[in-house]
Image (cartoon, rainbow, N blue to C red):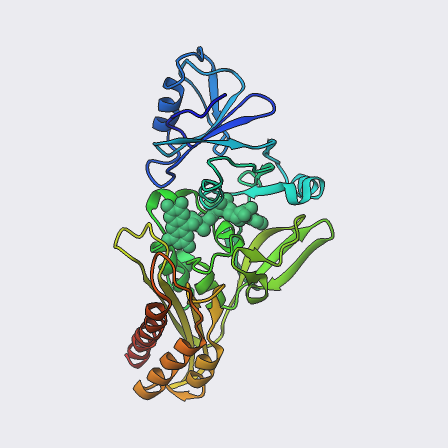
Length: 370
Ligand SMILES: Cc1cc2nc3c(=O)[nH]c(=O)nc-3n(C[C@H](O)[C@H](O)[C@H](O)COP(=O)(O)OP(=O)(O)OC[C@H]3O[C@@H](n4cnc5c(N)ncnc54)[C@H](O)[C@@H]3O)c2cc1C
């Protein structure tokens, strides 16, 4: 089948599957309207049900062959997507079995908001290997236990915003970051696990989670283990995960001290669809008026999200005042190693690291005094 214009994100036809994917993911994604449009655009397909691969919903509108699956969304410029298999396991054990079987040829898909656009540059063709949809594993939860706050890897970003768990200090910083992540529509699909596993240097949710000293529960053929988030990131789009491993959940340990936190994001324009030019998350712990612990986490200014540990050391040794804040901001700037890219120059990014760290610490200082 040749390349066609079609109003749907991914259409998978036949066995082995042949997929068509739309160019834009950010508008009108994942709705019936797009499925209907897609179906109507193929007049030759007669009166058959179509199924959305991600939502599992089936729609019969006429004009679609029986073995057609859809991942809905988007609205322009179809491109071809070739995948050798689409799997929707019902249990974690089945998922691990598939990962063990297909190894590097397997690709987990949660919300798909990173995976699908990532493959658009490759001559409009995607060789995705075996896509394994993890949306049916029950990994969408937010729970409080004695150990801390557990967040399932497949928890949608909008659910972080609406959860009461993230309405108070210092955990509210996660909801703050979630609120400025993309658009409402994307956040309805995008997951916290996908944001971390994609390991982008600008991943908005990675920053507050590093500031909150989060751990990850990793599953694989040899069982589960816990790893701290800082060790998880290995480089741009690179994590410590082996091909047969997956993330089950994020664990945020409780803190005993009074702690205040904040998140700031500088983007190119106000639409928020854009990823950050620089983003910063901070968390400071206080004993009486003294700052006894600090986390200053910086994104989009190095190969991966990182803690500015020299700046943290300057802040956590005493009273938080303007001098300490200015010194820490300048030090954080020195610790950053950004690149020039289409969003901003490296030099501008460095300046903005200092500005955002300064602003973020000043906001916390004011709140600590009130
Ligand atoms: C228009 C648009 C705007 C965006 N804006 C922002 C933004 O403002 N800020 C931001 O940070 N990001 C942004 N993104 C990127 C993206 O939405 C996020 O990174 C999102 O959180 C990814 O989640 P997902 O569930 O869609 O991941 P997916 O695309 O499903 O997966 C991403 C990666 O993680 C892997 N993966 C997913 N879940 C697991 C798991 N449980 N275990 C192991 N591996 C796993 C997948 O195999 C894949 O490699 C944007 C994307 C788009 C399309």
